[in-house]
Image (cartoon, rainbow, N blue to C red; front, side):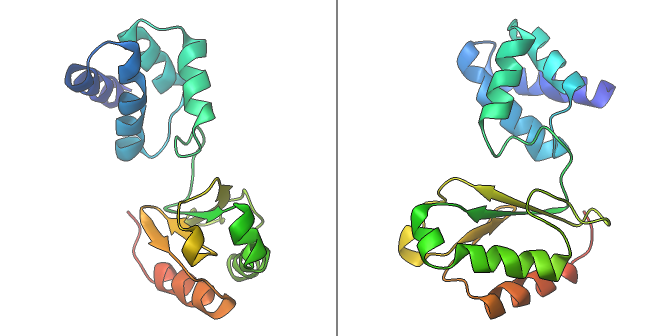
Length: 157
């Protein structure tokens, strides 16, 4: 907890103690810690002199601010209508079968989490997905399996 406290204080010193500093502080914590715990949210609220409800509301509103533990590789499948029309559901089924999990779950080895997210901004190259910070476009079932296999071979953290 001391590490998280010092991280939050460092981020607050960088971004300031204003209400508009909340999002960059939360993003900085997720970048370092990979998740926002209840304790972390309370520390952020205290440091920014905001209510815990304000901080929690912001943290849970944005899909990229994880408030629960995720796998090492977070797969976010675009759920826009364009991706849906171009085969998003088949891609999700392929991922579920390949990873042996359901949408919203994390593999037992904590390597992968499979989620849907709002538009990734690549509608002209649909269907698309994001794995951590890497965008994958023009997906088909073979491409999805190949991408997942390549991440399966990668080491942890």
